[in-house]
Length: 227
Image (tube, rainbow, N blue to C red):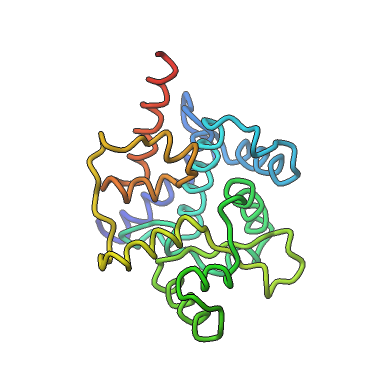
């Protein structure tokens, strides 16, 4: 794909985001104005996370994933994932702060401080361990978040415990990458709804893209409802 074709494709994606898709199947397919209105409700605490329907949570997660990648990852990067998001994204704009609030709503029970992440991975939380964590962030191994309710920006950084544990397990097995697991051997609905794994993490487990993992989740969720 040429540079011009890449930019045109990116522009088409932006146009779709602004206007929405015909017959939207979920929040991610609706116009950006609708998505932001819902995000603001979540940021204001108008919907309790522990009482939210798992299907609704999945829609929010898919919508914010698509939005983050589309707006924050350069369109000419071949693997456009959240792993290459700017570390300071959450503090540098009003939109970043809003998205930080929504991500906190999504993952707050899975968040941990840098100190806890360092202790979990390296058994200590000193300067050397913090530098190792920063290296993992720079490599895209860990995605940094913030606690938007933490007044001290020096201690606001957070990481997802599930992601830290996944990396630790990979290192203990001596495998740099997660080996794909047969799709039929994993309960994708349970992984997402109960273990609160992201679609990116589930996709890594079964060797498919995040979008494909989300589609499989929706199909299995629909099948379960019909039983």
